[in-house]
Length: 440
Image (tube, one colour):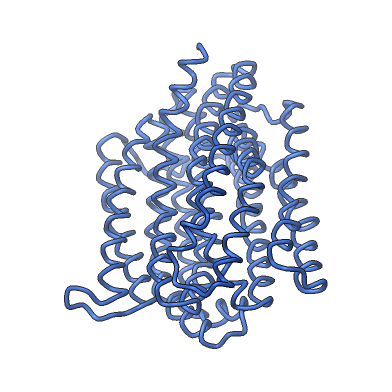
């Protein structure tokens, strides 16, 4: 395959996935920009109210990643029965996780929001938000598994179209329900939550429709002892890894929240644009998982290694351009929110810090989240990520934020050095080629 044809093939997957990820991130961004017109308490409430969803997004994303590893390799082997088994098992696991998350949000929302701040007004508003968005998780979980097989069948454009429609629904309902337009009551943060749920209903309905057009799926949970062991060996490390990583990120939010509401609101301002920016390049990680997974399924290891390096180069160039755009446009973005000067200044400085860190973050996504995981050796990334988060990031955050009480920009920059540690270890793992594996 020539450089040009590989680039086109990569972009055929990466661009629709990236645009879809950006649209998904736009849900959060739209919520924050519109809710941002209500002041810093509302911004902080949506930030902490979205933390259960943040954990679910990464854990469910781990299950979707496992689905992609299995489906892409079995498509490479032309084993349709194993594709059905992969879809069935992972759908079941996804539903269990989604229902547990929903129950936690319905029954203990006050406990979940109270972890991150002492501000009573923020806790009260955030609790109401958590209860309503608890309905999202089964909807988005099922849709994400269906989207995996659609992409593996070379139709990444369908999830993109679906996300575009859902984003329009979310934006329109936000406008109506947050501010009370067209005769509707002005529900504020509650309106943003209702809009999010409604958009996910639309997302799932459309995903089922397009899935039925291009995929044939039979429920099949027939796995022997060896296959069950192999599945657990792939699934457990990646789900445990993503869970522990998100817990670590929530510890960071705990630190920001206990530094003050201004600091928490300033960090919350950057969350949507960070998600949007990383989403713009997440397609390369997805493309890496699918393309390299198929190569491994065909046992073309040298081609898999060479193409992996090309994907890393694409990611570096893209992340460098993204960082430049963020630095130049930071004041324009912060100006979208009705916040006081101190919160706006904190948000702008944090965006510059994120822009500096972004190239390393993107390389970790492509290498760890896509390439190395494509071989099914997920325990390697679990070990690397846990070392980075819990031996570097969390201790540095607690030390600089709660003990030394440094400004939040320095706290964020210092604790984010976990990304550099993770990157160095991952490069050594990649070069060793020990991650290359064809699953049975």
